Image (cartoon, rainbow, N blue to C red):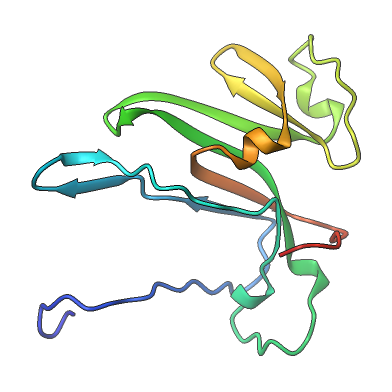
Length: 154
């Protein structure tokens, strides 16, 4: 509390003034305590492939459905290693058109309607499964606004 300098339970909220084309969520993955000092926060973060961000819009009363505020996961950045001071970053990206991979000659797997996931690990790019993406230790999530929302969006 700024007035009494005491610790209080708090809730952080975010509201959007307009619908951005992309949403980026960055998780604080470092903790500090007397016994361990600065260390990595390895708690699991569950995240959806698709979600409806209508409730994040400022002034939204919850009554009207807004189909233009649905987002699809486009990329994840993950950190491996036990310390926030060292380790390795990798990313998973959803490729939705061949123009996105023109510089990577050996990607031959066909792209489905929802796109194909790829794991980018230094100079190696390999196809990835959706379950691997959802099990990743997310550090950064990048969502893109969908033109035509799909059913089952959370």
